Image (cartoon, rainbow, N blue to C red; front, top):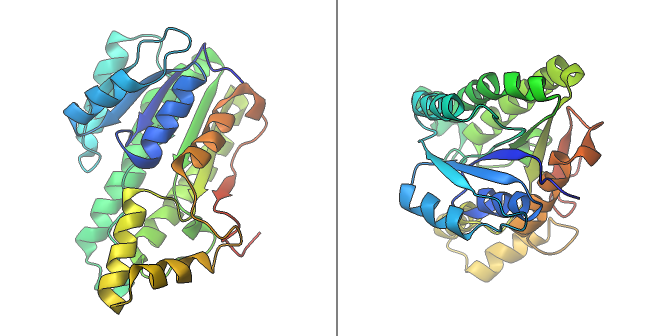
Length: 261
């Protein structure tokens, strides 16, 4: 599988799943543009990405909690780079954990702006170029909660469901232009967010880490946590020409944890 003729924009790509995705796409030959808020981290990651096809990777600085920043950064980039992007990976940090009834309206507004509004702005900016090229891949990193809501993630469950329905609607609208839209649903994947959820559970229950992790692993048929590289491999496939007839889907990468089909 090669992506050597394609350009990719990857959100939240200085760490965790986003960085693993950027690395996988670069390894497949894509030219990768990172977008996140930490310029120093962006610079370091961009310099470390694989370059098997002699690519020159770059980055954009924007904070996904500020949709206007994201829109301005991408608009400026497209103004200077007429080739645009063939691949968009929508990925950013999830809303804080907590019971639904503890959440404030502001919590929902922040999460909606960070996930739904930013996705919308990026799609509006990039789809015209994808349509002109006759090739587009929009891949949203959300959560298995779109199939089965997860306890203690009230705001996240709500917003992830909104993103999934946004994506399905968009997939139907752009499929005839050679553009696919799919969602990848991480399960318990070893990342900083995964670590924060474990630490929160330890603080709430007073249980030792081993006990908390064992309870989580009992829910996973594979009996292990996932690696970010495994999720990135699924994204790289969906970004490729081989996945051209797959659109509007939710793909769990969760070791079998999600109980629904």
